[in-house]
Image (tube, rainbow, N blue to C red):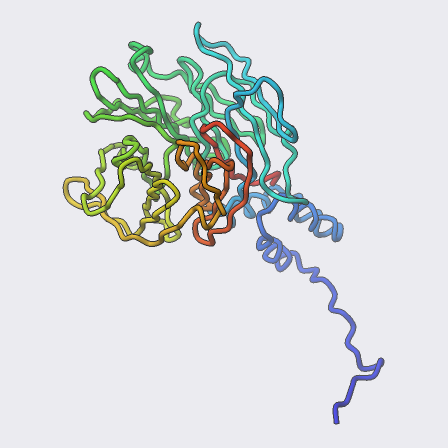
Length: 385
């Protein structure tokens, strides 16, 4: 016979721990979502005091530094009017003659209560958005590079080396920024790369904010026909420089050297395909090959002698089945227009709109009805901690 406890034998609920060291260890393990610390701070005065401590917030960021949440994305607005639930920042700083004002729109991707109001992010700079990393944005504004933190609205303007501005009509720029936490909360390294169309030369240099100066100029001869935001694997940056053959520019931040990486002939890239560099779940270099309504995901790559990358096919994805794409007479093919290396999430343009796809789980969300193929810039960061 089952014996049920009487009312006098029922244990009272355990009280919340009041040991501050234990509490800190517990609170450090909260998910790094925007609402986590705010909601926890409402539990008690003790919890609020611990969470408000700047030292705790630094530890919280350090504990989750590999997994900042994907807050949303920016894209260039080609329309005259504002779109609903989106915030446009219009750059205003000076720029050379002929530089057109660009408008970039922020769209949040998290649901309530973690959804960030779009109006929280505004930037006062002019030029081209080159990408995000470690919560920092990089823009090129005429002869200057602008590093911007949307969370704090911190901005730093850096003069681009004069060697990069010999003839702006034949030079295409791209670059990357990385936060250097070991040197301070606003320390960063900035890599700028330009391509001389006539000479077919890629040149690069690194700026370190702590030193306040650029390093030596390095260069390599190659052909390039596209410039996407880089993907960081370990301490190396990979820029896609060949749209269809999948050639990469590898930039080593430690040695400040670069090399052109070719795809192995064993990796089939059908005619009309597009290639996107990836950072795989195990932290290695991977890539996606998108052809019509199919996407192939490659990983376990190695770079052998002669700078040739080889890999293993990890997954085939039939995009029309995954996304329930309808047949279309539109001749434009599906295309990867953005990528977040932290969450391993791609933004895919299709004739039915833009989809955000997490590549491990294949969970997808439609994020925009967009008829234009344009760059989407994912923004992952801690907010507001």
